[in-house]
Image (cartoon, rainbow, N blue to C red; front, side):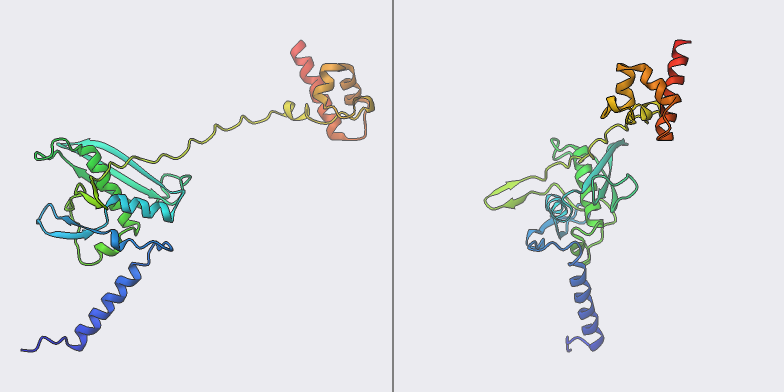
Length: 246
């Protein structure tokens, strides 16, 4: 019996290859190919081995693509587990709802690995899924893997040269605190900055002259006709002074 592919099968294989090549170009960074960094992971449900990018590689790729990006993680305790939600932002200043991708993962304690923090494991899993949803490693999942549950063992060790290290916990990268808004300038504060039109006080503001020669402000308010804005400002200063002395 011949095993030769029929034309429809060949066409489907060709289309699938083209689709995977197109997906592999998502978030492309010149000089960086994530494929050699993919490793085999164990499926915790079926025991099968899958090819996937470690979360640390996804994070490095994300930083290459978006140097000013942000990964925000929140964790809440659940029943016998921790539930983590991760959001990926292309810039640290993006508002909370303007994210590239979002994912949630829950993880509990492992009896055979009591030193593993379920909280950090949940964080790592949520960040990895969110980054994959944002396109960082999507081509490996598109090869036929199904991720319907907490299947992938993110805690598997990976090798970098001659050393092996476990997956590090993901720590939220917070956005820089915004400076507090400056208080609105009052009308009086604005007019105190107006230039004084009197020649002998040239280069000084009405506020400067008010401290040095208050009578000059009265003259500007009642006699000066060269600039109504300055005259009105001087009148406001006089009115304020009268209210404070009343």
